[in-house]
Image 1 (cartoon, rainbow, N blue to C red):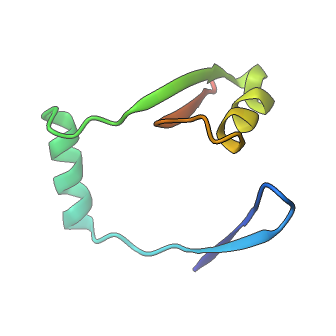
Image 2 (tube, rainbow, N blue to C red):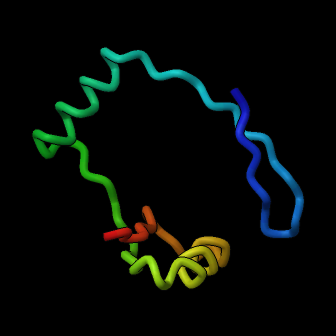
Length: 71
């Protein structure tokens, strides 16, 4: 399966998505729940600021995950 992402300069890039086996997902979930793996969240944006969030990511300033809060 391929996903296409519109890049910074309007060029389309193909990303190959692979299936992660269920046992591996369960192990990752267990490690996250145990606090062994912690996602690094750089910034949290409200949904109304989605354009700002995208600009932040595209600007290369993000040092972790950028989250858009929907609710």
